Amino acid sequence: MRAVRYINLSDKTASKIEQDRQNHTDNPYACKDENIIRRDSSHDVANLHRPAFVRDVEKIMNVPYYNRYSDKTQVFSLVRNDDISRRAMHVQYVSRIARNIGKLLNLNIDLIEAIALGHDIGHTPFGHAGERALSKLYRARTGRYFNHNVHSVRVLDDICCQNLSLQTLDGIICHNGEMEMKEYAPRKDKMTFEEFDCMKEECYVDQEAIGRLIPCTMEGCVVRISDIIAYIGKDRQDAERLGLFDKSPEYSQEKIGTNNAEIINNMIVNIVDNSYGKPYIKMDDDYFMELKAAKKENYSHIYGNEKTEAAFKEHIEPMFGELYDALIKQAEEMRPDSVFVRHHVDYVERSTQYVHVEHKDYRENTPDDMVVDYIASMTDDYFIDLHTYLFPESEHKVKYLGYFD
Image (cartoon, rainbow, N blue to C red; front, side, top):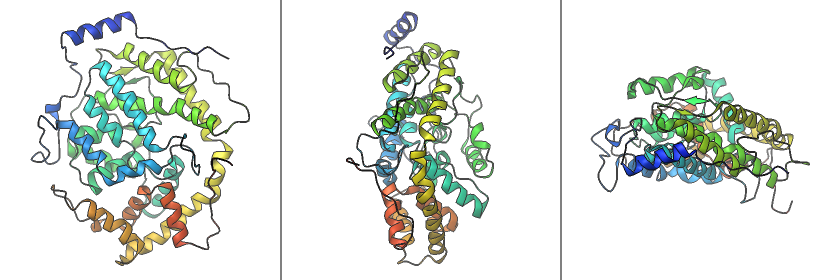
């Protein structure tokens, strides 16, 4: 068994951080509270007890959809096991890792927390498999693509109308934890809401647009790399706890480590050593190559594992299609007594009844957009319960893996 290896900050970096803290030296690349941009600047004005980006954090945490993180798949679906990460835990891990990096780099911790807590709020049930299934259905009917990071912005900005800052929304849409880079440098041009809306729309119609997104703040860059750091080792840990492997895989990472604690510690340290005082977030070449290799090995051993894919392909994916078709009919009819209206449209309207900024009537959205909103908002259990309710005779049934199975 290989020895566990934890690295520390270099003496040079540690000394510089301590000196700058003693001198109260600001990071010139941090996003300042006074530079916050909102759609309606007359509302949500910062004060001493609710600073600029703290308001975004609290708004996100109090959106009704935030509660639903707790029963959405991170990687492993249909498992009753409290030791396995759900999306709520993943979001907390991203926030903790990103705030650790941000504090060491003297960035805006409140902005980092807002981006991290909101980054997956638009995620579907059943993880990325659910995301692909929903995008396929949406694409077939509308020619548009569904992406969870774009939908997170839609939830917070268009559905719940929270008047969040441009900086927070930009960090959320640009988080894309599936794309690792050796260096993350924020865009140099200043972003406006008009440009942001065009960028968001492009993601719906151009499949490649997601890969071109670059955050406009250093804080957004920190959350983006933290998203990857948060899941690489944790997914390995969860897979072991579930007994996914007959024999534990041999992971190849020597620098960043192979287990969750090593990966988090060593990646944070290497990033800070390479990024302190710089206008970018960066890691060493060998750390970057190992991070890429770690993710590739996770795909080979975990994400593409037959045990994790079989139930989804056989039952869950067809259930997405049945639900989509049934809900489209209800959305087109908009009968007040339908499940769609009572449990989704009314829910949205109740959630926005106290919103003071200008927003459009939710019922003006297309049926497809509203159905996608509804399905994406569901927890795993809600999805299964609704399918059972609408299709009691369906051949598609799922069985949870219990504690004693």
